[in-house]
Length: 141
Image (cartoon, rainbow, N blue to C red; front, side, top):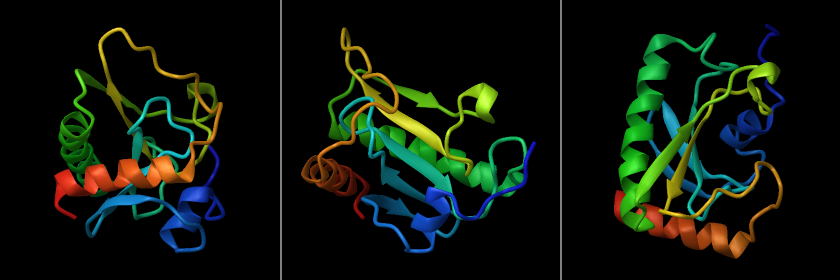
């Protein structure tokens, strides 16, 4: 396993160097819209502390991430009238990880609707802003 690279896109978002559509924040985590969503409302939960993935994240940070994942999952189901939710987390290149800062995908699902292929199209910024507003309204942020 390689060491953490603080030049990754999520580290830059956390430092305010890159924009994002934030939907939730607490002292240990943030949740943002995924810019290449596999479904409308697809978002990411990210720890504020530096870690590559599940293999090196501190237990307290992992617990905080999972608590936020659960909170965001409930909000996604309500905001997007979803029938279910897909939670995904990838570790290292062989495991499908592309950005090497721990993150968890929260994807709303509807019966009979397939997810879009991964990392195919960037979403329209207006759509991301609208989806983020829907989620913030449910989360009361």
